Image (cartoon, rainbow, N blue to C red; front, top):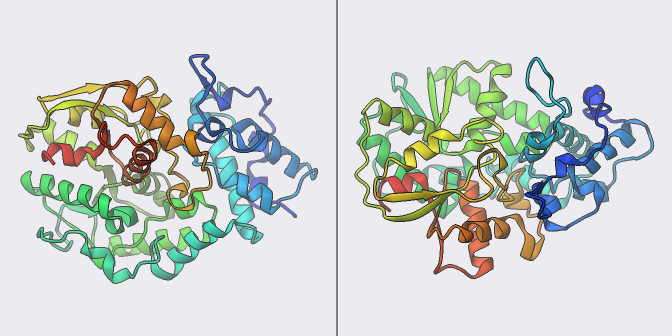
Length: 398
């Protein structure tokens, strides 16, 4: 099988010396930083170093894509932990010479092209194509999340478009976070609107899964729609949407400004346009989402917003900021669940780390993290000891 997308990254792939630093351990305790490596699921091909070796062997013609290799590839959450750990950096740009997440993404694109994607990945992509969301839910249910709160439809002239995304629109738990965010924006008097049923999937997971043609179609349709509506500024609920709109849409003609909601709320507070009266009390630990933190370098805004609640005490987990441990949901794994790992699934590991801090609440800023960490709490059977709250919920005191 001739590699199509992987060949584009050939030069960087063969610069990797296979040292293995990218798989990582934490404080010499043997705790893997790569969420797949940490689970103990799979062999060398399931860790960053092994994935690059596989890429080299494919390009050398010593290995071919197969269904077994595809299953291994799609376990990767593309959390970028390996990117932070790798010491091979371009001196001028500060970028990693060997971009492992991009290499994995290219291999996934080849696998999809060859029709070798695992069944759950195919289901995810087919649902997006048919229904516009991964859950296979009707498109006319997308705008029902506001329930009893009044949210206006976006009109040209509104200052901000609030983009909710698939998980926030369809997942009942994440809908609560979306409603809390609306409450905060309305409290601050922000001129904004939503697209409701006319909102389309942002395509971040579609791209991460390697379906490049579908992603390009979706992104171009979104950009066309936003231009027609004269959208200048977008606030996203999800870091996944923020990531793709910020980093991928501009090359397809996007000209709008995009912010994650924690960045926007932090700015409002600094400009004295939003005062927080929440009486939320207790010890809280914050989990950095991969697509907000490592992928986009935003660590301060969520913490600034959280510490604006005077009755709240913030404590850090031992792995935080650029070394935060992935919840396991990226790369559409919140749906496909290809990592597994049982007791050592990433979400369960992360919940145990949160419990170590003594916190009663894990604060998150991502709908996918809500899903994964709440599942981890249930699996660990610690529902009475710790809970997950989106930052917006904490700010409104819910």
